[in-house]
Length: 428
Ligand code: ACO
Image 1: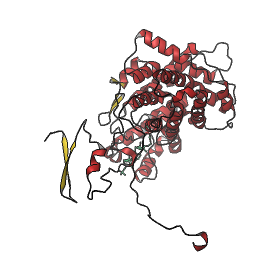
Image 2 (image 1 turned 120 degrees about the horizontal axis):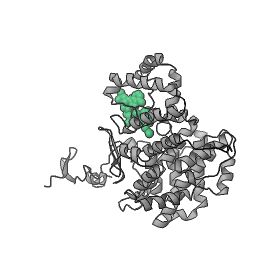
Image 3 (image 1 turned 90 degrees about the vertical axis):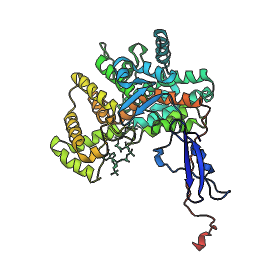
Image 4 (image 1 turned 180 degrees about the horizontal axis):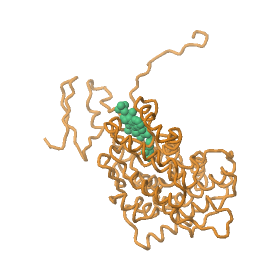
């Protein structure tokens, strides 16, 4: 008998099965042979939220949640945040290697050449109400892009795929900036690709016709680093949505609209918005102990704390905290920072949080930075989506090329009624 197996004894029948173990994993389908009667469906696993189910083999992002390690293609997030740029990280995620000088120049040029959006899409953006949530606009705009680029359906053609990658990475900041300008009733600024990725985005958001307008390099760099920190996080909710939709061979715009919709929720991309609301509700450092008591009584959650995977300090939170101080040198210090720092200190000394391994996650400080930079709160998940886009695309490419992948279609445990006869309305 090989050592790399799992022996299962079904106590209902006394029968023993030997199931292979590869990469510390058994195949769920190998359990199907475990049955009492020959015509039984066979054993399944029950895993709501997929807490212990691998849906794919991946070579993109490595996380060790217990040690607080995050690596993209094997490179530690700390080194990438310190030394790389967002577009270089996007290349790394999608192609698996760091680009040469020429490859990076070509990559950046191709993406920045795709920053203009179709005028039909601009017209569509103008139809939203003045107070439309920019995340709703972004989700709709990404979906609408599939109608403008119908060849994107050819998901098995790598050239066509690459073209959509240039388009998506190039156009998303433009859509996001237009959504913001729409909201504040200002004319849209068309892209200036000479300003770099984050610089061009800030320009499209802010430019008001000043003759001496200059993008602030500290703020552009901070945004670039924040995008790097959000660029991928393996099989999270939105990435799983991207893979799930794309598994039906839907085009990447339709799949990414679904991914962005998943990111919209407060337990995922909406968490930093929720952190700010929470900090404002707490109001002052003196109110923190009372708030912590409410968390412990389960009346409220401590937003920006806890993570499905990290059971240690989220390494991205450490980098973000440092960036916050650089940004505050330019902007004024956000008064909520003092409450956040004290809240973190008290929570990290409290047994409720220690015993549950609840630490600050990436979103605990990101909202405070975005607010200091002047972003309205409902733009926060949009910023997250811009950062996460290369991760979604890298995971999509990996999935399309993976011969193991099939259309995503989980099983269920059916507990409902069976075989009822329809009852006519007058007899109910
Ligand atoms: N505040 C208070 N208690 C918490 C928190 C929190 N933020 N997070 C988890 N817990 C407690 C739970 O009540 C539970 O306690 P119990 O065992 O006594 O019942 C225990 O810790 C485990 O929590 P789960 O909900 O099982 O953890 P799960 O992995 O399902 O949830 C999640 C992870 C959703 C991120 C959760 O920690 C949370 O809601 N955090 C706040 C929202 C947030 O910051 N989300 C951003 C995530 S990062 C991102 O998307 C980029």
